[in-house]
Length: 134
Image 1 (cartoon, rainbow, N blue to C red):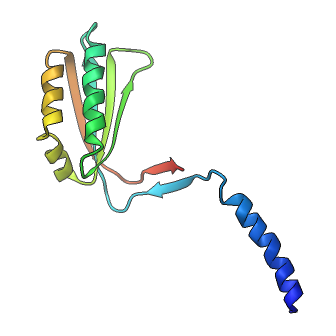
Image 2: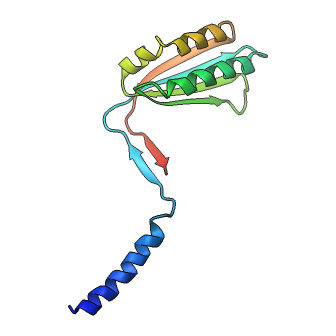
Image 3: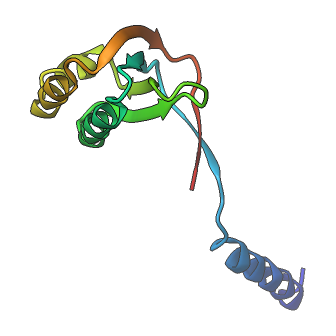
């Protein structure tokens, strides 16, 4: 191949790469190994939802800064505003055990005492977790 043909082919390739690189792309991020998950459902005393959510939001924001805590999602039912679902994702069970010893968790427990009528927790192992990222 002559040098001019190689250069002519390289230029469009370089321009295409330059145009595509800054575009927002999404990647699927998969975990390596099993993750430990705590899925917790609460029924909140009517009139106490705002107090509960304020405390759990503060706890969740601090929790994701802990080593071993990957995710802390707080959701409210679309059909029952007194029903809250929390999904916590940890590297392993030891990370959750460490979480419940933190000052922010103890503050959350004290702040939410008497705000719930039901708490149901399931502990799970991940099989596959897919994340759309930037």
